[in-house]
Length: 390
View (spheres, rainbow, N blue to C red):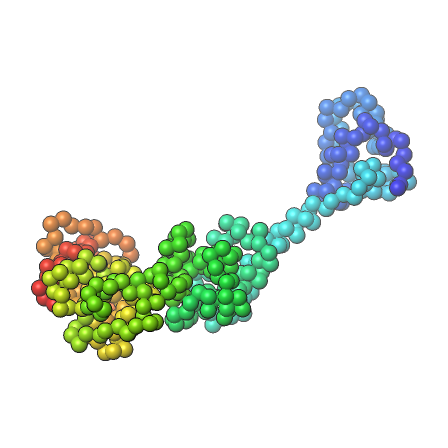
């Protein structure tokens, strides 16, 4: 251990060396800049004068660290400022500036890797990726994860695969295919957090908190979490009213009526048909159709059944209709501009149409009429018309 000269080891200098130590650690262990000492007592002033090589006449002194470093190199027989402080403290100084830099680089690494991955896969179009990455940066979620670079790259692979693929796949199979581990996308896994945040950003939804919300979000990406949680409400495809699950569809055959099939958005419509028109088979999407409902409709399409669809006259209802037309070939029924205007006239109380307009792919005039009147019409409001005209 290096012997420290008495004039440097003076107890009166202890607070001075602490200040110098802090300054060096914050400045990359380099003797640069100045520090200011204040409120020094007489003994401290004398001790400081000894290490500066000049008198200190007040309780305040400004120390140039480069000058002090040079003075100590010439007089201490230990070395410069860093060597002296380490000898006095009995332990090496920590380069906190380097640690901050390394920490910053570490924090940026997964985001740099994400941008590099996107650049290396130009065929992948994820226009919402920057928003997703910015959200992850704000949460700081990746800072506490092991190997965050590999984690975010794997999340991108899964998000890109789901963005470009329309096939329905189980969550376990997706995890096994992309990660080699069937449990890699279980609810408690960090990868699941990243993927769900990505899907929520892509579909402009809130990050899911409950199990139901998580299942709904997975299903938007055509990922099936299990075969029993989600159901499709039907009437006339099985004995009477039935809540079909994927488990049911995998084990039994759906009866396809020879007559036209009504596909509706609201359960109340199905209930009314079951009570008043029991000869009509009905499938209810209950809003945004889940995977079970899509499977049922796909079965009906493949059996060449004629599916007539009616939904709400609001922007989400128009968007659902567009998707069902293109994906499953349903035929919009009683959803023309004329039907809409007539329904608005018969409303006892008008409901404001809110949100961003969606162009009806089957009839642009309907969209113009909805913008003009600015009124939403839910299926329940035209129930009598639907019952008597089907």
